[in-house]
Image (cartoon, rainbow, N blue to C red; front, top):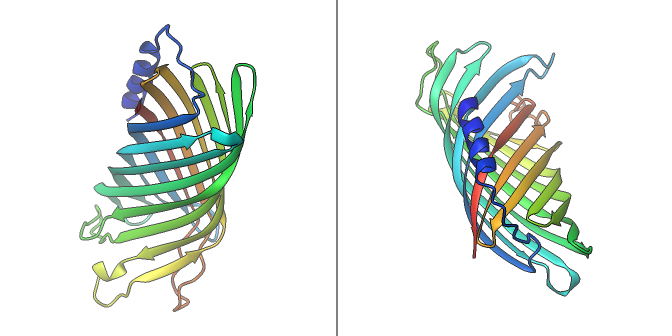
Length: 257
């Protein structure tokens, strides 16, 4: 996986041309495809020791629409991805080829500040994130049954976007508003029920570096990180979702139109 990421980064830098397109247009509409690597990890709720991890790859599409007219900024970013991850646990063995899906949509509002040859935009907004890890009906190396898990996040992005020449750099702090995790343990046995846990604490970060090789095409390196705290107990008072972190890095290729 590391070799694939290195090849993608090499392609990015080898294809940067001498021609410099301006990144700071008043209106942007972009469609892209991307590939990334993903690492998910859970920690033990008592001593914070390693509990389980999943790592693999994601491939997806993304859209970007931005408007800088009338001294304000409005943006709408979407992404849809599918991939596969491998599971490793401290007590239930390993599992490979688990389907993994994610959908995310974020609206942004902000204030751009024009410089002589640059533009800096401060923004906030509202975002939603949906994840499905589909290990149901699969068995681990030790014979333990997997089960599907759904995650839903609502968050508030707070960040800054800087554009100069052909480059655009963006950083976001993601203030976690609310989350919910549903674990379909009924797939393991009919003796179990499905559990839904509320998640109230956490945070995230996003960083991107974008390069416009010309007015219609460009590249973007991205990094997303989430740290979600222990969930509340479910309604039975017996089941909780432990603290978990997710990191994803990759490369996007996009077309402007």
